[in-house]
Length: 152
Image 1 (cartoon, rainbow, N blue to C red):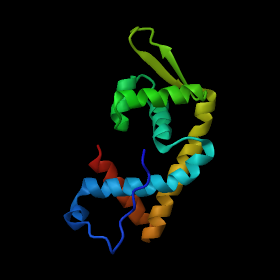
Image 2 (image 1 turned 60 degrees about the vertical axis):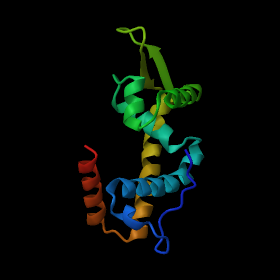
Image 3 (image 1 turned 180 degrees about the vertical axis):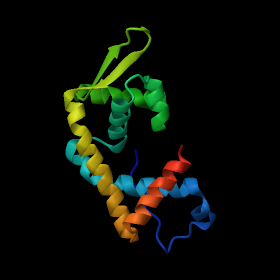
């Protein structure tokens, strides 16, 4: 993922895109991801790998295709991530007992152990963005609730 995007500034004209929810969500994603990545490098992961680990942990019956779709990734890209996570000892891919064409995905103990660290790093990105914008705790909570509504 290219994390070189520059967050919006008051002097840069974004025209009508500042009224488009999807675009604003994308800019927010770039900003929080950039901030979280300053922490993720400490554990030699990127934010997408962290997302994949979390999705697998919480959806043990999901297929690779399901995980890729929910993470907004294409099949070949998810395979590379799964290969990397497996090689790092964070993930196990085992043949499905019910369908030979599928693999079951589950975190190893090492993968499970990283989950709280990953969460902390993501939350640090959120907190930094919210504080920089001067949002109160109530405003931050409202924003999260609204984004959840929009992404249901």
